[in-house]
Length: 151
Image 1 (cartoon, helix red, strand yellow):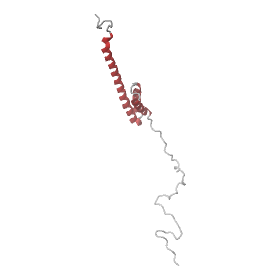
Image 2 (cartoon, one colour; image 1 turned 90 degrees about the vertical axis):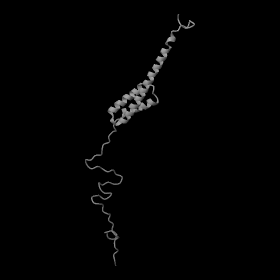
Image 3 (tube, helix red, strand yellow; image 1 turned 90 degrees about the horizontal axis):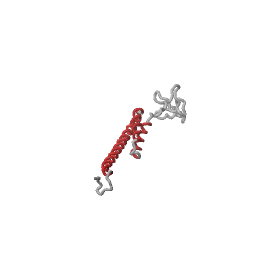
Image 4 (spheres, helix red, strand yellow; image 1 turned 180 degrees about the vertical axis):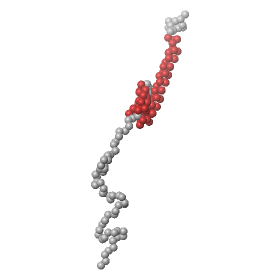
């Protein structure tokens, strides 16, 4: 009676199963550190997980940009709001390097709006001063005379 040959590549005898050996220096799958499925991996003794850090502050920079956008949409006729946004942008640029883009956007928006507002105020005052100076001779006309000129 002849014994059947084991399948090609196997060194096991008939009816015996032996799992394949892993590559050199690796532990077999599912073994090592005693973990089971669904359980978190525990750090080695003395090892800790990395700490989670808070993001760098950007509050002043974001406030400056938001004030610039709001001023652009709603409050373009005031001087105070863009001035506050400009100050917040400059302070945010110096104190919050992480918010540099927000601060620069806020500075540009608020400076442009502040410039437009100042130009509008100067133009408004100039128009009324010129109109008032042009109307000045007509203020002192005597309406009782027919020509309107005092003799």
